[in-house]
Length: 182
Image (cartoon, rainbow, N blue to C red; front, top):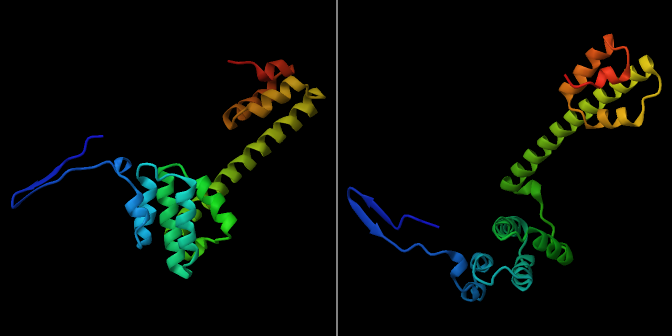
């Protein structure tokens, strides 16, 4: 990792040393009375442990309202940097800490984006399933029972392919002709 180690402006020259937080000992942060320091300990060397998560969650459990929600949000964001979300989720459930997404603007926005994406994906999946069902009915009406090999093709097809088959079906003299590759 290469970081710029100075600010060089016309009226200011400031030099500093950039340090990778993963190289720092997290124990002083973990022993701090400041909760934010404790949470930062997750990012330090040997900080990404179940014991660290449990200690931080025990401190957060003593909070209430918005302060608790913000602390949990911060913990989840930093835990994501160390791929610890499943551990945090598991420990949160065991401690019966409830994160109210609706009262947290940051999480509410992320949740709403995910909800919108899920709705869109659901609509698209529903649309393609409807197209598959239509092609199946058309094939069955034109050629009789649709064999398993044709069902497999239909199940794997995208919208464009289904549309092509639907058009070919109008002139095809056999099931094989509908599924031919151009």
